[in-house]
Image (cartoon, rainbow over all chains, first blue to last red):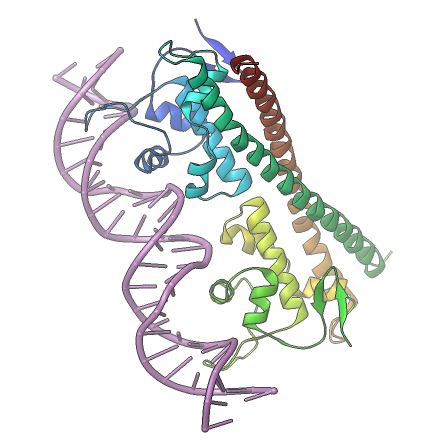
Length: 154
Length: 154
DNA sequence: TTGCTCCTCACGTCACGTGAGGTGGC
DNA sequence: TTGCTCCTCACGTCACGTGAGGTGGC
Protein backbone atom coordinates (compact mmCIF):
# COMPACT_ATOMS: atom_id res chain seq x y z
CA UNK A 1 0.00 0.00 0.00
CA UNK A 2 1.34 3.38 -0.97
CA UNK A 3 -0.19 6.63 0.23
CA UNK A 4 0.80 9.74 -1.68
CA UNK A 5 0.66 13.03 0.20
CA UNK A 6 1.23 16.21 -1.76
CA UNK A 7 3.09 14.32 -4.45
CA UNK A 8 5.52 12.64 -2.08
CA UNK A 9 5.55 8.91 -1.71
CA UNK A 10 4.98 7.89 1.88
CA UNK A 11 5.07 4.27 2.86
CA UNK A 12 6.41 2.17 5.65
CA UNK A 13 9.42 1.06 3.62
CA UNK A 14 13.01 2.03 4.41
CA UNK A 15 14.58 4.40 1.90
CA UNK A 16 18.09 4.51 0.49
CA UNK A 17 20.14 7.67 0.63
CA UNK A 18 19.82 8.35 -3.10
CA UNK A 19 16.01 8.24 -3.05
CA UNK A 20 15.88 10.49 -0.01
CA UNK A 21 18.27 13.01 -1.53
CA UNK A 22 16.22 13.27 -4.72
CA UNK A 23 12.93 13.56 -2.86
CA UNK A 24 14.16 16.28 -0.55
CA UNK A 25 16.11 18.08 -3.27
CA UNK A 26 19.62 17.85 -1.81
CA UNK A 27 22.68 15.67 -2.45
CA UNK A 28 23.77 12.53 -0.69
CA UNK A 29 26.84 14.43 0.48
CA UNK A 30 24.64 16.83 2.42
CA UNK A 31 22.79 14.00 4.13
CA UNK A 32 26.03 12.33 5.19
CA UNK A 33 27.39 15.67 6.39
CA UNK A 34 24.29 16.32 8.50
CA UNK A 35 24.53 12.84 9.98
CA UNK A 36 28.19 13.50 10.83
CA UNK A 37 27.17 16.69 12.65
CA UNK A 38 24.49 14.81 14.55
CA UNK A 39 21.61 16.72 12.96
CA UNK A 40 19.70 13.57 12.12
CA UNK A 41 19.59 12.29 15.66
CA UNK A 42 21.24 9.13 16.96
CA UNK A 43 22.33 6.74 14.24
CA UNK A 44 21.10 3.47 15.64
CA UNK A 45 23.97 1.03 15.32
CA UNK A 46 24.80 1.02 11.64
CA UNK A 47 27.93 -0.94 10.80
CA UNK A 48 30.54 1.21 9.08
CA UNK A 49 30.59 0.54 5.37
CA UNK A 50 27.00 -0.73 5.17
CA UNK A 51 24.18 1.13 3.46
CA UNK A 52 22.27 3.88 5.27
CA UNK A 53 18.52 3.35 5.50
CA UNK A 54 15.91 6.00 6.32
CA UNK A 55 12.36 5.91 7.65
CA UNK A 56 9.56 8.24 6.49
CA UNK A 57 10.07 10.20 9.69
CA UNK A 58 13.74 10.68 8.90
CA UNK A 59 12.70 12.14 5.55
CA UNK A 60 10.22 14.49 7.25
CA UNK A 61 12.89 15.69 9.64
CA UNK A 62 15.32 16.27 6.78
CA UNK A 63 12.70 18.29 4.93
CA UNK A 64 12.21 20.49 7.96
CA UNK A 65 15.95 21.04 8.35
CA UNK A 66 16.33 22.03 4.71
CA UNK A 67 13.38 24.40 4.89
CA UNK A 68 14.72 26.13 8.00
CA UNK A 69 18.08 26.43 6.32
CA UNK A 70 16.80 27.78 3.01
CA UNK A 71 13.87 29.97 4.06
CA UNK A 72 15.36 31.40 7.24
CA UNK A 73 19.04 31.24 6.36
CA UNK A 74 20.04 29.49 9.57
CA UNK A 75 23.50 28.03 10.14
CA UNK A 76 23.74 24.34 10.95
CA UNK A 77 24.54 25.22 14.56
CA UNK A 78 21.31 27.18 14.79
CA UNK A 79 19.48 24.34 13.08
CA UNK A 80 20.67 21.91 15.70
CA UNK A 81 19.21 24.11 18.42
CA UNK A 82 15.86 24.70 16.72
CA UNK A 83 15.03 21.47 14.96
CA UNK A 84 12.69 18.93 16.45
CA UNK A 85 13.86 15.80 18.08
CA UNK A 86 12.49 12.79 16.25
CA UNK A 87 10.59 11.86 19.42
CA UNK A 88 8.27 14.81 18.89
CA UNK A 89 7.55 13.62 15.37
CA UNK A 90 6.60 10.30 16.88
CA UNK A 91 4.33 12.12 19.29
CA UNK A 92 2.52 13.98 16.56
CA UNK A 93 2.07 10.89 14.44
CA UNK A 94 0.71 8.99 17.40
CA UNK A 95 3.37 6.33 17.35
CA UNK A 96 4.67 6.41 20.90
CA UNK A 97 6.77 3.59 22.16
CA UNK A 98 4.78 2.05 24.98
CA UNK A 99 7.89 2.15 27.09
CA UNK A 100 7.31 5.90 27.53
CA UNK A 101 5.22 7.16 30.40
CA UNK A 102 2.66 9.94 30.14
CA UNK A 103 4.76 12.35 32.20
CA UNK A 104 7.77 11.62 29.99
CA UNK A 105 5.66 12.22 26.88
CA UNK A 106 4.41 15.49 28.33
CA UNK A 107 7.99 16.55 29.04
CA UNK A 108 9.05 15.92 25.43
CA UNK A 109 6.07 17.78 24.00
CA UNK A 110 6.51 20.68 26.43
CA UNK A 111 10.14 21.08 25.41
CA UNK A 112 9.32 21.22 21.71
CA UNK A 113 6.72 23.97 21.92
CA UNK A 114 9.18 26.86 22.44
CA UNK A 115 11.10 25.63 19.40
CA UNK A 116 8.03 25.77 17.20
CA UNK A 117 7.14 29.19 18.61
CA UNK A 118 10.63 30.47 17.90
CA UNK A 119 10.46 29.15 14.34
CA UNK A 120 7.15 30.91 13.84
CA UNK A 121 8.65 34.17 15.13
CA UNK A 122 11.52 33.87 12.67
CA UNK A 123 9.09 33.19 9.83
CA UNK A 124 7.10 36.30 10.73
CA UNK A 125 10.23 38.45 10.86
CA UNK A 126 11.19 37.21 7.39
CA UNK A 127 7.72 37.93 6.11
CA UNK A 128 7.99 41.53 7.31
CA UNK A 129 11.40 41.98 5.67
CA UNK A 130 10.09 40.52 2.43
CA UNK A 131 7.02 42.77 2.50
CA UNK A 132 9.31 45.81 2.88
CA UNK A 133 11.46 44.63 0.03
CA UNK A 134 8.42 43.94 -2.13
CA UNK A 135 7.09 47.46 -1.56
CA UNK A 136 10.42 49.03 -2.46
CA UNK A 137 10.76 46.93 -5.59
CA UNK A 138 7.25 47.70 -6.73
CA UNK A 139 7.78 51.42 -6.29
CA UNK A 140 11.09 51.27 -8.08
CA UNK A 141 9.60 49.41 -11.02
CA UNK A 142 6.88 52.04 -11.34
CA UNK A 143 9.49 54.79 -11.34
CA UNK A 144 11.60 53.01 -13.93
CA UNK A 145 8.60 52.57 -16.22
CA UNK A 146 7.58 56.21 -15.90
CA UNK A 147 11.13 57.32 -16.56
CA UNK A 148 11.37 55.11 -19.62
CA UNK A 149 8.11 56.50 -21.01
CA UNK A 150 9.50 60.02 -20.65
CA UNK A 151 12.77 59.16 -22.32
CA UNK A 152 11.49 57.11 -25.21
CA UNK A 153 10.28 58.77 -28.39
CA UNK A 154 6.50 58.50 -28.86
CA UNK B 1 23.32 69.57 5.78
CA UNK B 2 22.34 66.09 6.77
CA UNK B 3 19.13 64.41 5.64
CA UNK B 4 18.07 61.33 7.55
CA UNK B 5 15.96 58.81 5.68
CA UNK B 6 14.51 55.92 7.65
CA UNK B 7 17.18 56.24 10.30
CA UNK B 8 20.11 56.14 7.91
CA UNK B 9 22.42 59.09 7.58
CA UNK B 10 22.51 60.30 4.00
CA UNK B 11 24.77 63.17 3.03
CA UNK B 12 27.06 64.08 0.18
CA UNK B 13 30.17 63.08 2.08
CA UNK B 14 32.42 60.18 1.18
CA UNK B 15 32.34 57.28 3.64
CA UNK B 16 35.13 55.08 4.92
CA UNK B 17 34.85 51.31 4.75
CA UNK B 18 34.32 50.93 8.49
CA UNK B 19 31.35 53.30 8.58
CA UNK B 20 29.78 51.62 5.57
CA UNK B 21 30.22 48.16 7.04
CA UNK B 22 28.55 49.12 10.30
CA UNK B 23 25.67 50.93 8.58
CA UNK B 24 24.94 48.03 6.26
CA UNK B 25 25.50 45.39 8.91
CA UNK B 26 28.37 43.47 7.33
CA UNK B 27 32.15 43.33 7.82
CA UNK B 28 34.87 45.23 5.97
CA UNK B 29 36.12 41.87 4.71
CA UNK B 30 32.85 41.30 2.90
CA UNK B 31 33.01 44.70 1.22
CA UNK B 32 36.56 44.09 0.01
CA UNK B 33 35.58 40.63 -1.19
CA UNK B 34 32.64 42.00 -3.16
CA UNK B 35 34.88 44.64 -4.70
CA UNK B 36 37.35 41.95 -5.69
CA UNK B 37 34.55 40.02 -7.43
CA UNK B 38 33.48 43.17 -9.25
CA UNK B 39 30.09 43.36 -7.53
CA UNK B 40 30.48 47.02 -6.66
CA UNK B 41 31.03 48.15 -10.21
CA UNK B 42 34.19 49.70 -11.62
CA UNK B 43 36.59 50.91 -8.94
CA UNK B 44 37.55 54.27 -10.37
CA UNK B 45 41.34 54.46 -10.21
CA UNK B 46 42.15 53.95 -6.55
CA UNK B 47 45.84 53.61 -5.86
CA UNK B 48 46.70 50.29 -4.22
CA UNK B 49 47.28 50.75 -0.51
CA UNK B 50 45.20 53.92 -0.18
CA UNK B 51 41.90 54.11 1.67
CA UNK B 52 38.65 53.10 -0.04
CA UNK B 53 35.97 55.79 -0.14
CA UNK B 54 32.26 55.27 -0.81
CA UNK B 55 29.42 57.50 -1.99
CA UNK B 56 25.86 57.31 -0.71
CA UNK B 57 24.95 55.49 -3.92
CA UNK B 58 27.63 52.89 -3.24
CA UNK B 59 26.04 52.30 0.16
CA UNK B 60 22.58 51.93 -1.42
CA UNK B 61 23.90 49.40 -3.89
CA UNK B 62 25.59 47.43 -1.12
CA UNK B 63 22.34 47.37 0.87
CA UNK B 64 20.52 45.96 -2.13
CA UNK B 65 23.16 43.28 -2.64
CA UNK B 66 23.01 42.21 0.99
CA UNK B 67 19.23 42.09 0.95
CA UNK B 68 19.12 39.96 -2.18
CA UNK B 69 21.69 37.66 -0.64
CA UNK B 70 19.98 37.31 2.74
CA UNK B 71 16.29 37.33 1.84
CA UNK B 72 16.48 35.34 -1.39
CA UNK B 73 19.55 33.24 -0.66
CA UNK B 74 21.28 34.09 -3.93
CA UNK B 75 24.89 33.16 -4.64
CA UNK B 76 27.28 35.97 -5.50
CA UNK B 77 27.25 34.84 -9.13
CA UNK B 78 23.48 35.23 -9.20
CA UNK B 79 23.80 38.59 -7.47
CA UNK B 80 26.11 39.83 -10.18
CA UNK B 81 23.51 38.99 -12.80
CA UNK B 82 20.55 40.51 -10.97
CA UNK B 83 21.90 43.57 -9.22
CA UNK B 84 21.49 47.04 -10.64
CA UNK B 85 24.24 48.86 -12.36
CA UNK B 86 25.04 52.08 -10.51
CA UNK B 87 23.97 54.00 -13.61
CA UNK B 88 20.37 53.05 -12.95
CA UNK B 89 20.65 54.40 -9.43
CA UNK B 90 21.85 57.64 -10.93
CA UNK B 91 18.86 57.60 -13.24
CA UNK B 92 16.38 57.15 -10.42
CA UNK B 93 17.96 59.84 -8.30
CA UNK B 94 17.92 62.26 -11.23
CA UNK B 95 21.66 62.77 -11.33
CA UNK B 96 22.53 61.96 -14.91
CA UNK B 97 25.84 62.96 -16.29
CA UNK B 98 25.04 65.44 -19.03
CA UNK B 99 27.38 63.50 -21.29
CA UNK B 100 24.64 60.88 -21.65
CA UNK B 101 22.11 61.17 -24.42
CA UNK B 102 18.39 60.48 -24.01
CA UNK B 103 18.56 57.34 -26.13
CA UNK B 104 21.47 56.08 -24.06
CA UNK B 105 19.54 56.81 -20.84
CA UNK B 106 16.53 54.97 -22.21
CA UNK B 107 18.71 51.98 -23.05
CA UNK B 108 20.06 51.79 -19.50
CA UNK B 109 16.62 52.07 -17.93
CA UNK B 110 15.13 49.53 -20.35
CA UNK B 111 17.82 47.00 -19.47
CA UNK B 112 17.24 47.33 -15.73
CA UNK B 113 13.48 46.72 -15.81
CA UNK B 114 13.68 42.93 -16.38
CA UNK B 115 16.10 42.70 -13.44
CA UNK B 116 13.65 44.40 -11.12
CA UNK B 117 10.82 42.24 -12.44
CA UNK B 118 12.85 39.10 -11.86
CA UNK B 119 13.66 40.20 -8.32
CA UNK B 120 9.98 40.79 -7.65
CA UNK B 121 9.15 37.31 -8.96
CA UNK B 122 11.72 35.78 -6.62
CA UNK B 123 10.30 37.75 -3.70
CA UNK B 124 6.80 36.48 -4.48
CA UNK B 125 8.01 32.88 -4.71
CA UNK B 126 9.65 33.24 -1.30
CA UNK B 127 6.51 34.73 0.14
CA UNK B 128 4.51 31.73 -1.03
CA UNK B 129 7.02 29.30 0.49
CA UNK B 130 6.99 31.20 3.76
CA UNK B 131 3.18 31.26 3.84
CA UNK B 132 3.16 27.46 3.41
CA UNK B 133 5.70 27.07 6.15
CA UNK B 134 3.79 29.41 8.42
CA UNK B 135 0.57 27.43 7.96
CA UNK B 136 2.32 24.14 8.76
CA UNK B 137 3.99 25.56 11.84
CA UNK B 138 0.75 27.07 13.12
CA UNK B 139 -1.07 23.80 12.71
CA UNK B 140 1.74 21.89 14.36
CA UNK B 141 1.79 24.23 17.34
CA UNK B 142 -1.95 23.78 17.79
CA UNK B 143 -1.53 20.00 17.75
CA UNK B 144 1.34 20.13 20.22
CA UNK B 145 -0.70 22.26 22.61
CA UNK B 146 -3.72 19.98 22.38
CA UNK B 147 -1.53 16.95 22.93
CA UNK B 148 0.11 18.52 25.95
CA UNK B 149 -3.25 19.38 27.49
CA UNK B 150 -4.29 15.73 27.11
CA UNK B 151 -1.11 14.42 28.66
CA UNK B 152 -0.78 16.78 31.56
CA UNK B 153 -2.62 16.16 34.81
CA UNK B 154 -5.43 18.65 35.41
C1' DT C 1 53.17 63.00 17.68
C1' DT C 2 49.77 59.64 19.21
C1' DG C 3 45.91 56.65 18.31
C1' DC C 4 42.71 54.84 15.43
C1' DT C 5 41.36 53.14 11.18
C1' DC C 6 42.84 51.73 7.16
C1' DC C 7 45.85 48.57 4.00
C1' DT C 8 47.54 43.86 1.96
C1' DC C 9 48.72 39.09 2.30
C1' DA C 10 47.48 34.65 3.78
C1' DC C 11 45.86 30.86 6.37
C1' DG C 12 41.40 29.06 8.68
C1' DT C 13 36.46 27.74 8.54
C1' DC C 14 31.77 26.46 7.25
C1' DA C 15 28.90 23.86 4.22
C1' DC C 16 29.18 21.36 1.17
C1' DG C 17 31.13 19.62 -4.32
C1' DT C 18 33.70 16.31 -6.61
C1' DG C 19 36.29 12.73 -7.94
C1' DA C 20 39.21 8.14 -6.63
C1' DG C 21 38.99 3.55 -5.49
C1' DG C 22 36.38 -0.09 -3.49
C1' DT C 23 32.20 -2.93 -1.69
C1' DG C 24 27.20 -4.54 -1.46
C1' DG C 25 22.26 -5.66 -2.70
C1' DC C 26 17.92 -6.56 -6.46
C1' DT D 1 27.20 -12.50 -12.90
C1' DT D 2 26.46 -7.76 -14.32
C1' DG D 3 25.18 -3.04 -13.30
C1' DC D 4 23.86 0.26 -10.32
C1' DT D 5 23.99 2.41 -6.03
C1' DC D 6 26.17 2.56 -2.10
C1' DC D 7 30.60 3.21 0.92
C1' DT D 8 34.87 5.95 2.84
C1' DC D 9 38.66 9.02 2.40
C1' DA D 10 40.29 13.33 0.91
C1' DC D 11 41.19 17.37 -1.68
C1' DG D 12 38.62 21.53 -3.85
C1' DT D 13 35.47 25.56 -3.55
C1' DC D 14 32.56 29.40 -2.11
C1' DA D 15 31.94 33.15 1.01
C1' DC D 16 33.79 34.94 4.01
C1' DG D 17 36.58 35.11 9.41
C1' DT D 18 40.71 36.16 11.57
C1' DG D 19 44.98 37.44 12.75
C1' DA D 20 50.01 39.36 11.25
C1' DG D 21 52.57 43.14 10.07
C1' DG D 22 52.61 47.65 8.12
C1' DT D 23 50.93 52.45 6.45
C1' DG D 24 47.91 56.76 6.38
C1' DG D 25 44.72 60.63 7.78
C1' DC D 26 41.98 63.97 11.68
